[in-house]
Length: 259
Ligand SMILES: O=C(O)CC1=CCC(=O)O1
Image 1 (cartoon, protein in one colour):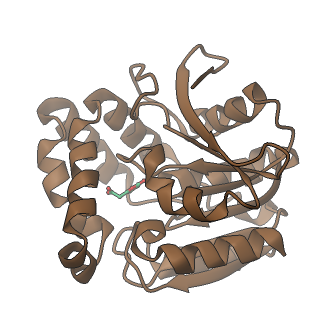
Image 2 (cartoon, protein in one colour; image 1 turned 60 degrees about the vertical axis):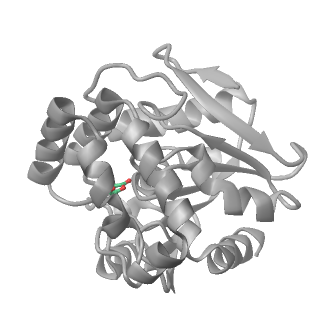
């Protein structure tokens, strides 16, 4: 199904569970799709009305030309809730989706009950790094980047044991729209919420991966230190911890949201 945002972009979403339950909006990482939440969709439908969507520029959502901004990604999440008539929801996002969650906690706290941000940072990477990735992707496409993705996303042991899943995710990345991906890199190049974290008052769970080379445990600790309402859970995982440690991720998510 699709919702249309206030700037007339169509976003693809899926729902699971009973709409009478508390809503939980799930936001994907750069280069993935709504399906990345499959283990959470399977485990949490008893207690939550789950909504997972393809971020703009990704999957079946529209891919308007960039640059995008973190504000725009945050407003997209609000548009999904608005279109479904949901006044307040829980939110869980990973990496780029997690940074979107921090933006929502700062700028739209009245729309949320609790927020979970996984494998993220108030500022992910460097401006120059994202600018050069955006330029390379616009020029060469995503095939090259897809071959190096498993090393950024998973531990070596997970890659060995779950080759089919890793291949499926890298195929998804290679097939993404290069402008949509690059436009999200533009957003990440500019996004920096470090000075805003102390304004967050919503209950916030920060999930880190102890082996994450992209957004480190130190990044997660910095969020928790700056934000009095935050608590930290560290999982034995790399960057895409909801897929590498689904049971532990679901436990942490469910305990936090249901407490
Ligand atoms: O570089 C990657 O693919 C990992 C990543 C950084 C931001 C995001 O959402 O994913």
